[in-house]
Image: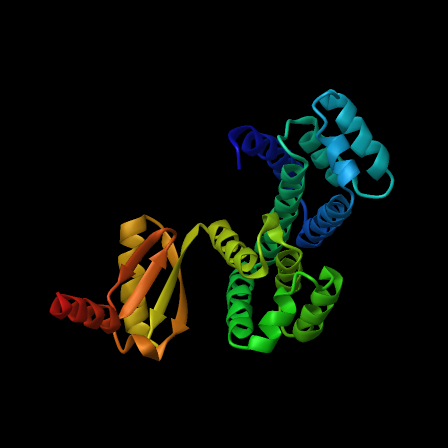
Length: 272
């Protein structure tokens, strides 16, 4: 996100956070629903996105436009936050959509945090990604850009209703709609990381040949926390092909201590 757009988003996010400081989990969830409904409106209305980012119009005029569209339909907190957002500058209409989506996600996470379910939401998002990744037919169906997003969202809701937190289902819908212009898989990964960040944690993706014991998990988490200066959420993926050892990815950092890597290095050394 360009600096000016990051600043534009931050101003609206700060206002939204201030206006919802005393809100209940249910009120935060309602605000999240409203903001994400506006994101869906903007996704289907390019002309409106252009009007709301038109540099030839003053910020006040753009704010008045969004107020005229939303006033009486959505809550004052939502309308004020979005008016603040569109009064700032965006380089492209798509960047406004990205910022509105992010504000909606922020509110979903704030609601889950207030309700005390955010750790469950993080785990459910990751597990759903694993389930999809392990089912080729489901992965193709959910990732198909040619299928209407509404149909794919309904499928996910049908699969998860009664089995996952409402916030999890809502965030998966955001991922299916293409959060920040990403594909479904990448959107889901980004949402896992944002959820973890809300808990002031880093995400560590750990690939192992077999699951670690509790004591081993605790030692690994403690070592990574020492390295990164904050708590770490461990996300495990089983891959027997690595034979043994483990691989850990945190952000752009990769630590590969697998037996498979050592064997490959040995083969390359003998081949020279």
